[in-house]
Length: 272
Image 1 (spheres, rainbow, N blue to C red):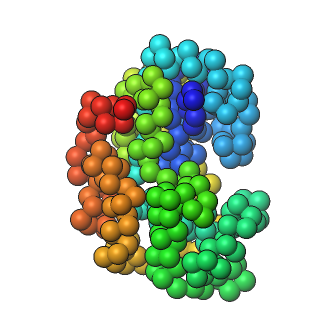
Image 2: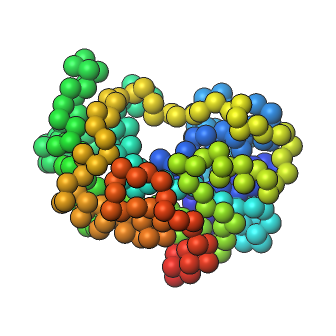
Image 3: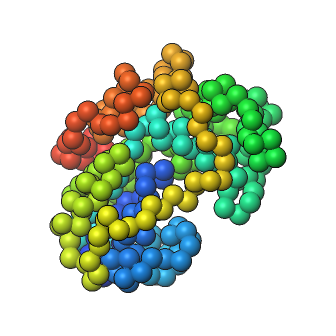
């Protein structure tokens, strides 16, 4: 199976396991900059040179050798599961993608038909009942994850622990897991442990948010989207994420973790 979703700088200064909706655009651009002294011109997910990625065949042997030998500092980044699934909905379901189209072609029409979701459009300024539609989307997300119906789960809403575990199961070990909510602090710790061809000043790095501006703005606080049933579904889908990454299940409005990630516990529980 190898190391899907793994990126590595060309200088092999650092290895990163991508977790969608967890600052991956910013992290990829920082890695690119640390090697080349400039950012990739465009969405870093579209780059095919300048950064080793498992999806690029010529990078696979290099990544595999590095990760299995633990030659470089390896890290990943996580995010509050409540905020992450909300972000997935507003970006991938309610939003218009960078190419000007809906995500995955017929996915949104299918959701409108089968789950009664509304998403509005740029023409009506995305006027729709966000809470009702999000809760119906959550049912759909649970169905994809639990029963793989009506489709396989999408990487943007499948559990973080699932993404992170492939790296461990196939022979990798993380040196750090940090929180999107404490991005500069966590990214700085990574930079403090590695030597890069070009120095990185995090305070001077612009924010790379590839999903911003393509869809509706969230109209309510986080907890308004999650009634008792929604929270039950969130626990069903993301129980391991809350437990391993120390997020607060009881208070959806508390986006910050309530503890540090225990790397030994994480490797033991995700390495089976």
